[in-house]
Image 1 (cartoon, rainbow, N blue to C red):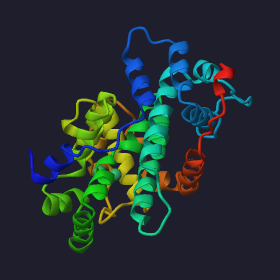
Image 2: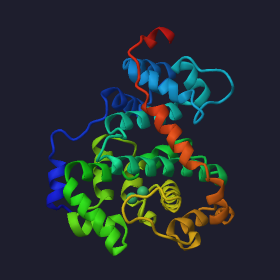
Image 3: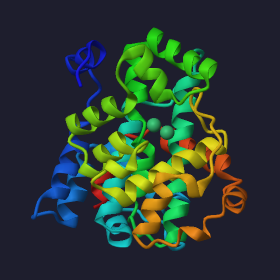
Length: 302
Ligand SMILES: [Fe+2]
Ligand SMILES: [Fe+2]
């Protein structure tokens, strides 16, 4: 359903674009000729990106074993190609839409806190339920609300109106967005994921994380839907989205149950306690990913 805001966004020439190397890596991941060498060589063409990916691979979020991984080749051997592609995607998006700290940017910071918390919670639940999403759950959580950033960036005044409306009326942000802007962050996020040529599950999660029953990638969309609610329950919210809920009333909970995942072990109270330190994890993630990449010639280390 087109509307003036959506049409304007579709036609904005300087809409953020992913770095070309990140696009190349994502395209490579779909090619039958994908190999460890091709992916690592491609990332090394962008030294600051390569430094950041290596730093993330060595951070507490991803590191496996006690030894430092000093080349991308080794990182891929240890973590698998998919995880390195996930890291490259996450780092690249955060580099073009950084969590800014200056005045007036508190909403942007709150936005990323919410998204990173959603990704980290998705990873906890994925482990707990044995879903084996292979790191896709973190990227999907990180990017599930990306449409909100775009709406805020290009329609800031209206977005603030929607934000105030959601608080006044105590309704979810997507209802407030529809009321004020005539479109939703789901629609915009879906459009952006397709424009950036991100994997299909990311576009799907963007469009359906508030209505996972309609998703093609039902398991990961349901996982992100629940993680999103838990992030809000932990006060990582954006606008009037601080809603209370009962897990077993959720569409996502039923989808996962029907798919055979042991959702009965997800006790809301206990789980909220288990993710008590999520705020610290979010801060640690932001500071690791925000350190600038260097221009040093990491290529020599292949
Ligand atoms: Fe959302
Ligand atoms: Fe969200």
